[in-house]
Image 1: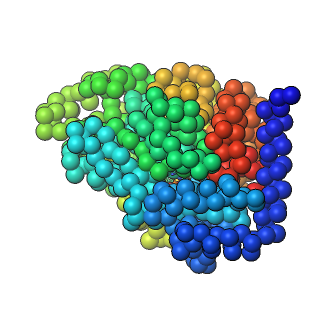
Image 2: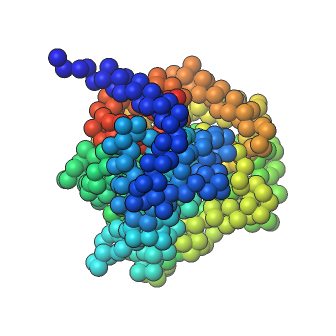
Length: 522
Ligand code: FAD
């Protein structure tokens, strides 16, 4: 008799927990077996390596692994996965990119964490650019800033980015990779030709839309559940030289969103007249004008902006960019004016900057350095990132920004709000987005002290409860749930495919346990 998938999976999950339990009681046994492997010299038990693998950018969750693998090639990774997969007592394994998750997603309690960045110095794929310049083959361990620097050297660039570039290619492709380019190019996962993946069965598979497509679609946005991405082939285009970078302020939310939606309606990939980047954010009384979203406003403009915020308590800031180079230098201002014609921003509250392309893309890093110097970077980050259907964004503004956020008055750090187009995403991939054609991303990217992050987590819970009560069907980005029910709801109609793929590519539930999808007790 065929076993029904859910009950089979439940049985595997129970087995895996049992194995994890046995594993804990046999730690010494596991360590001695690991030491017999060829990769033993690349396993670190050094307290400082263990300590850093137990933490992440969130500074909220802590999970201590047994060991940290410092691979120098994908074969080291395959060897570790193969050992666990074939072992009578398998152990859990987490690829760790730059550990910029905020809820322990790259951790493996009592298991092995793979420090992907150690491959930067090894024999894995570094960054190789095709001779015709049409793509780059990039190791999953590479930071996006390295990809930018390498491609710019040849006058080329990827087209879809994240706001911050000290994230790994494998880490962002496991989520989606979004920023102000997403409305036009789609997320980073929509801009990948091919990937190499080491699955949970230790198979080394090259996949693309035409080759092993199930694994390709599973791994992109797959939260590390199906395999470890060791190479991605990223399309490239000629790089612009400079950007016109504009911020406009609004006090009326519907004016702000109407203008955002109008601007993203021009979104053809090759449309020279379209914008190249669009985001939006909240300026709040309690937040500094210059948090890590970059010191954009000139000192002479700040007093009038601050008095606007003091008067209205929330000001909405629309941010756009238009690229240009030697050829378009003389027309860029006219094109920009044409695009901004008829917008409803507050007269006198448009601010402009001219910057190098790479300075704009790497804008968060300079703020990171400033915050680091003040000891304000490596602090708890109780973040909440949501996707909200366009039809409910105004209800969200009333119930969350104007009520919860203003009443609690604790939010520090950037609060992002900007729309994107569903048609630029590929629904065959694992990433989950709302059903509507236009949806917004909202990111409450809060920083807190080490003793008050729970207050922010309470606010996050209140926001989610409000959405549920108000019938706002949000989807979390960089999702974090602690129950199976939460995950089933999150994936909705994609859940059965997600489960089936897990069974196919990681049947022993070894990979990325810190996501707590199949390993809720880890
Ligand atoms: P990690 O946190 O190390 O890992 C994330 C998950 O992916 C884990 O489950 C891990 O096991 C898995 N994983 C890691 N590497 C691989 C691999 N090679 N193969 C398979 N699975 C792997 N995101 C955006 O989309 N847009 C933004 O603009 C943006 N800005 C950010 C700014 C800051 C300051 C920070 C801290 C985060 C930002 N993020 C943004 C979120 C970021 O994309 C995710 O947290 C991402 O997971 C971080 O990448 P990482 O390399 O540090 O991954």
